[in-house]
Length: 288
Ligand SMILES: NC(=O)c1ccc[n+]([C@@H]2O[C@H](COP(=O)([O-])OP(=O)(O)OC[C@H]3O[C@@H](n4cnc5c(N)ncnc54)[C@H](OP(=O)(O)O)[C@@H]3O)[C@@H](O)[C@H]2O)c1
Image (cartoon, rainbow, N blue to C red; front, side, top):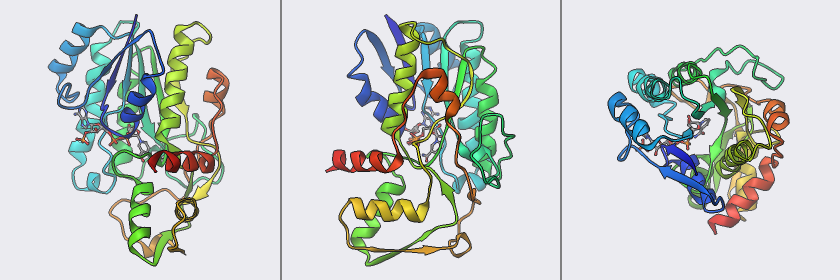
């Protein structure tokens, strides 16, 4: 039976993987978060992996405080990079498949066409630099897929969707930036794609191809468009007003354009990716 270890399992993506795992029979899932397995501890990580012998590891653990990382870069590097090295060191020389999740923030955001996997990373923030270092640490293992994603949201944890829902209920109007373009990604879709990849490889329907991949929902929008859609789909009355990034102060610079080209993951693993707007609708229905 395939043993699949999920780290950081109490977060957005890990929680969705927990729900999805109920539809996958014949796999032995081990869900861990920091209390069961602190991946920043090299000894604990190595011993846990040796004891459980997973055939697959999906690392959902991360330090995601984009602004906070500007004042605590060492903590971001510890969780997003050193801890990833602990995992790849622990599976060195084995055939364990490693799926590590990364971010659009590894790019500068100065492009005007979607970033493919060959685009040169140029992170502009502490968070982005820590995630890029994590990608390199993950790729030290021979059987690693790094999946970069963006604008992740779900019913779990804190994210843009939940912030807008809360603020739109409390206010008559909101101001949201319209000059940052990307693609929202429902964590349930990313979790579903990861499980499809794992099960297709296990059933020999596709070959496991190590490397970097991009996954977001389909489509493109600004944070303003996303907020407007959230308010509309939730049937709220709040007015959303577009503002420029310069009018919204934040410690870390956000990319102006971070649309990811998903052709490679779709072709390699026969994935169909839903449009962000239809996934938003589904997520809101589930949250009712
Ligand atoms: N969220 C986004 O918008 C976004 C965008 C692009 C890429 N990503 C990437 O997508 C992946 C999944 O993100 P997510 O939003 O699901 O993350 P999340 O909700 O922040 O979940 C991360 C989980 O990892 C846990 N964790 C932190 N340190 C740990 C440690 N040392 N050992 C084990 N677990 C630890 C966290 O616990 P605590 O909560 O207690 O810290 C949390 O439960 C991450 O790699 C992230 O960088 C996210």
